[in-house]
Image (cartoon, rainbow over all chains, first blue to last red):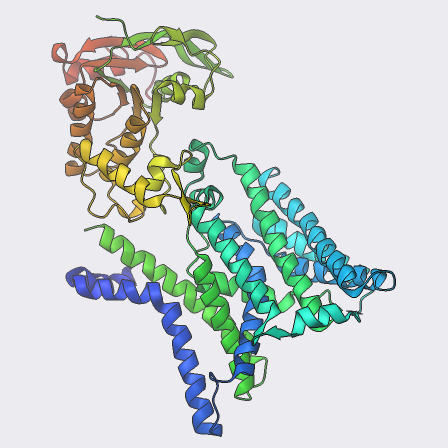
Length: 346
Length: 256
């Protein structure tokens, strides 16, 4: 703390500076998103004379990538606000993706494409609930730290998905899934429409319902939640189910987009989803975070993903830059807490 | 004395080999402030937990308005009107005043005429009004309560109890972690609640606080009632003697 003293002395003297700093630390993700959009737009114009932002194909690609991350990150936002973590979401995605593909392949010969797609969709989601309920039970009833419990589930779901897929990618040949996974209506991909609906539902749940406010209360003070009569263990199980359902949807959407079930479907997205939640203002100590913040986080990552490819940088730089942004997000979160305390201490 | 609002009769509690509480009895009237004093390990915490339903006593009983609370859970005891405020305050620091006051009993409204949503504005306004009525000013009631001062947070926990009709308030060292102006804020609040007829029990180590606000002082020593004095009829020296084990010339045992 002693190294931070000069800054703290300075802001303590200057109320306006403190307010400005607080505003920047609170709105930094919006500022950052605009900054990288401007950066890529300028790059596109000066290097190739084209546009980055004002082309439908680019916007579609970015928003589809953002939705793929978001589907995992929406449920994870709840878990992190309750001061837990779910590391298994990446492989729950793969697990649901493989099961969805296997079911569609098994049913395609006997059912219409839309019917077998619908059954595959539902069974894939339902299968995702199994690791979810085990996660919840481990954390809520057996008091296993969620970091370890869900890390174990990460391995189990990964192995189970690989075993069922026979170690390979399960290709499907279902025309209905190609429509839902790749087509658009008035330029808006169906996948993005699904994402928008999920964002609205999760935002409502977190911001406007008792379920949401109890999630925040648990992250702020478990004692406060217990006092209010919240059944903390049942609520925790519900949170891990929600997270599994959200990442299961991510897996099913992956199968639609690529006409294939893959055990590895969610492996890189785990990093992206965790990053989106923290960029969105959540904190490992819990109690903070919003769905809108997570959406901005997912958009930042999608712009970086697509933008780096756009300017012809080796794709591996995606991981480097997303990793860097996570660290920046945590540093900004810490300084925001400090400024908040300074203001409260007046 | 009029019919007591709370009557504690012959409470005893044993944990394994330790007799934490032995045959403790006292009464509390509405609008009376009782200070609970004693050294560390004297049984103060065990006593308030036995009253609030956290511990079930081995012998004796607690009567609230003449009815026994035996076998009740902490929540049932609280619903009855006995609220215990521990040092952690059980506030969600990340949420605002309104949500904290109503947590577990939230107000809802219908958005677009059909969608049930939390009515944050109404909860916040009602909470700010409640605090105002108790003489507590919060600059911006929309900020997370973690950003408020220790005294304000203590006041919020107390207001929450009073808003939900607590008639007996038990506080575990309410001023322990506070600076002097903040202590005064809490002490003033206790006095105001006494005027409103709330019965108050508070644990304190601070003799200044004890004498500034309490009507009666109960001293515990190793789980037993060492004495009970009206505040005007005693002084700090006598209390300290009682806490240390009566006015025996010296302790037979070596000090711990």
